[in-house]
Amino acid sequence: MPTQRAEVVIVIPARLSSTRLPRKMLLAETGRTLIEHTWLAASRSSRASRVVVATDSEEIANAVERFGGEAVMTSPDAPSGTARIVEALPRLGDAALIVNVQGDEPELAAAAIDTAIDLLDRCPSASVATLVTPMRSIDDLEDPSAVKAVLTPWRESTASLIPGPEVPGAWRALYFSRSKVPAARDWHDSLLTDRPPYWWQHVGLYAYRREVLESWNALPDSRLATLESLEQLRPLEAGIGIAAAAIDHAARGIDTPRDYAAFVARTAQA
Image 1 (cartoon, rainbow, N blue to C red):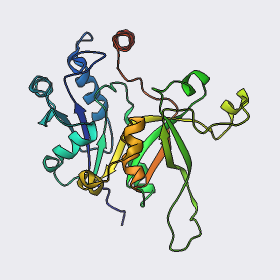
Image 2 (image 1 turned 120 degrees about the horizontal axis):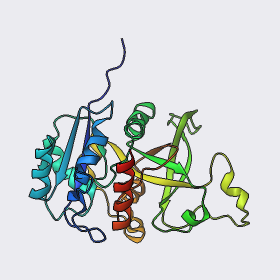
Image 3 (image 1 turned 30 degrees about the vertical axis):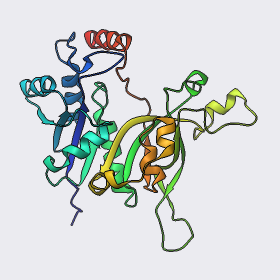
Image 4 (image 1 turned 90 degrees about the vertical axis):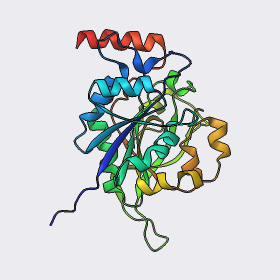
C-alpha cells in the first residue's frame, strides 16, 4: 500500500509597508496585483491542498478575497514572514507541512515549490527544506544581498557514528551568509565552474514540518541571525536540520521599482 502523503499548506506572508517599493503587494500595472500573481504561482503546486495569504493589512486581505483567494489577519508587529506564519498556524488546520512562499516572488515555479516539499519526504530527519541554485558569477559572490549557502551532501542519521548513505540530490545546510563563503585561499576563476559548485545562492523558500513552527517561539535567540540579518540561521544554530535541493535558476524577487518595471515588461511579453 503506498504511503499517504502529508497534507501541505502554502502560506504567503504579505505586509503592506515596504521601504524600497511602497505598497508593492498591491501594485497592479499588469492588470493583477503583485500578491495575486504570487498566489497564482503558488496555486500551481501539485503538492499543496491550500494557499493562504497571511497579512497585517485589511487592504491586502480585501484584494485577496476579491480574486478568490483566502487571507488570514496577523499582527503588524510580526518581525518576519516566518513569525507571521507561526501566528497564523492555528488557522491552518491539521496540515503537517507548511510552505513559506514570499509575497514578492510572482515568478516562482510550481515545480520549485514541489521540489522543496518532496525533499522532506526524501529526508525524514530534516525538519526544514529550502532551495539553492549554483552561483557562477563573481559579482554575485561579492553581493551581500545574494545570500550564500554552505552545503554538504545530506546523509540520513544512523544509530552509529558512521554516516548513512547520501540522499541523491539532497544537501545539508552548514551555514548561510552574506559574505563570500566558503573563502578560497588561492583564488582562480575556474573555481566558479567546478561541479558540484562550491558556491550556492540561497532561494528564500522554506518547507517546514509543523512541529518546527509550533516550537518556533521557544527557539533560543541567535546572535548569528542578528549579525547576518538572516532568520534561517536561528533554527540552524539551534541544531535543526535544514535540507536543500538545487534548482537551475532562481525566480526574480521584486524589491525595487526597477525590479517591478522589469516584471511588468516580462508579463507583457508572455
